[in-house]
Each structure stands twice: as structure tokens, then as C-alpha cells.
Amino acid sequence: MKIIAIDFDGCLVESQWPLIGRPREEVFKAALAEKARGSALILWTCRTGKYLDDAVKFCRAHGLEFDAVNDNLPETIAAYGGSNCRKIVADEYWDDCAVRMPAPALKTDRLGLYAVTQGIGYLEENPERSPAYCYVDKHDREIKPGMLIRIGDDPPERVYRCCTQEMDEDLGINASNEDYLKHHPDAERVYYSLINFPSGIIEIVKEDT
Image (cartoon, rainbow, N blue to C red; front, side, top):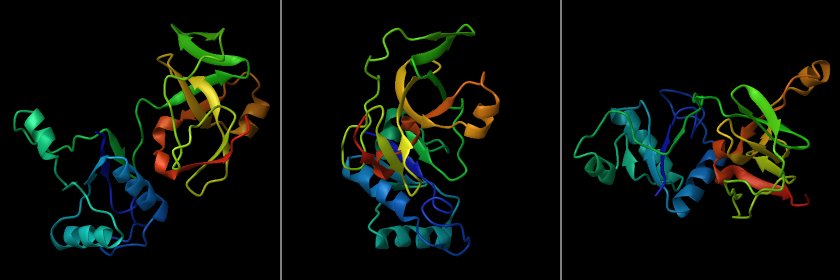
């Protein structure tokens, strides 16, 4: 079971503390999609007291119920011998201020996979090898290299075959500045892995590869 800790202000809703801002519909849809897939959701917020109660009621009114609120799941506590640490244990943390570290930069080349080992780059000899991860969009359609996908309300992005710094095959979208690359031909193109985006906000808009 996947556990997802979700922030409230600035993530589920626009930040209007101590008031409650307008809901971010794409995040609610993504959370509900994860819930339908069997994920456990934890509300993870700095709100307390009445303000926390208001947030829980607001989410419930929008169809979103949490398995825990600012607390670890009972099975997680049991798994750690009854210890309930202050940090919420989760597989994913959804937060408007989150930055994943180490940065999930991916490098590739039009001829195939590109990785770095001991500081030396190389081209993968078999660019047709299947990625180690399988990604689906919000309609459970498999995402493949060359497809156009939309993430949330952003413009469509092309999916590229690439690999992580650990040399695992992966899929990603462009994260490079095209103007910079145009003036720096030796610069390496960088990608963001699809693992950073919940499938509930991804939609395939063109399946032709």
C-alpha cells in the first residue's frame, strides 16, 4: 500500500491562511484517483485546533476523506514497535514547497540512453530496452516514449526515454531551457522523471510515437 502525505495550504487549496483558499481541483482529482487505487492518504499540515477541523471538513465536503490527520497510520506505528515519530512516514509527500533531493535530473541523447558512471558519459547500445518503471495516466493507459502528455493544466509535453544517475531506465519530460541549449551546444539536455508526478494529474493527449 502506498502512503501519501498531502499538505493543505498552498497544495490542496490556494494559500489564504488563516482562511481557506480556493480548492486546487487538479490536486483533489489526483488525490481521489490515488485513493481509488488503494493508496492511504494523510493530511499533513501545520494547521491545529479549529483551523485544522475546518480543513478536514472542507476536504470532506469535496469528497476527500483521509486515513489519518497529522498522524502516522496505526499499521506504521505498529511496524516501528509502537513508536509514533513526529515526521509522517509516507512514500510520497505532496507539498507546494517541496524540492526532491537529490535532484531528479535525467540525462539523455537522441541516439539512446545517456548515463554517467565515474564521471564518464556513454550512450546505451540498446535504446529499445524497456524502462524499469511503468507509468500510466489518469485513465490507466500506459505511457510510452514519444507520446504527448498533459500534466495538470500545463501545455502538452513529449515523453522521452532516459535513465537516472543510478543508470536505471526511465521516462521523463524536458526540463531544459531551449534558449540556453541553443547558445550552448555542448550543454547536456536535462529531464524530469515521470516518477515526480502522480498519475492522477497526467493525461495522454497523443498516443502516436
